[in-house]
Figure 1 (spheres, one colour):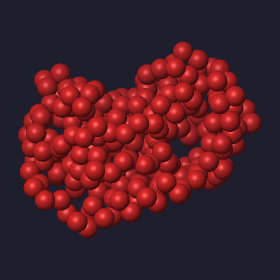
Figure 2 (cartoon, helix red, strand yellow):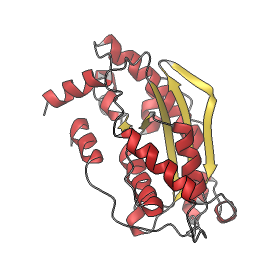
Figure 3 (cartoon, rainbow, N blue to C red):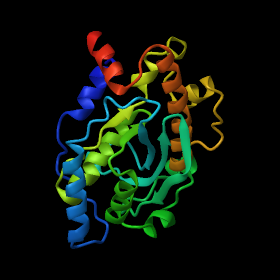
Figure 4 (cartoon, helix red, strand yellow):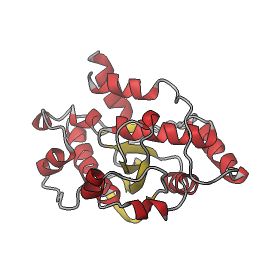
Length: 242
């Protein structure tokens, strides 16, 4: 599937019901109201015409117990980094572990360093998602291989609040697909190495978010040199290739 088709697929559909068992029997009404107001506001947001040089995005990454939230896999941690134009906002960062009733497997612990004790003592999913969405505000979100993040964020938001996750999540591939020198590069390691970005702290949600943010900056510089100055330019180009 090409990048535009993948992006459209990500925006379609609705989460099947699920439940995060975080020990919270009654949801905080104020947090529920905030999340629903934010999701409603997101429907009215239009970042398509903002020049890349002025666009603020929140680049984020998840570490999870697996790949399938509908089969019981859970988010273990969220990391995020804000970027405005070509500037990585070093003071605007987010990181949190998330409480989970499903501890990470031995392989996941070896990969991420996250242990069962870490998630047992972590903040509840409700607290983490509320804090994360307060941090992101109305920003467009960016992730590498965004279908993974999209599935989990939709599942978590529906499980907790019975509301759709309305933030636009951009997959980095919608930019890399325009850059001929990146043809065939898929993994975050490959894409970062292309721009000589250090990947020494891989598989930590915050550090992976920072790596992706640095790659995003390099990509928008390059696509601008090709004549694409905003998201609308890119979408129109990709739609024309359908």
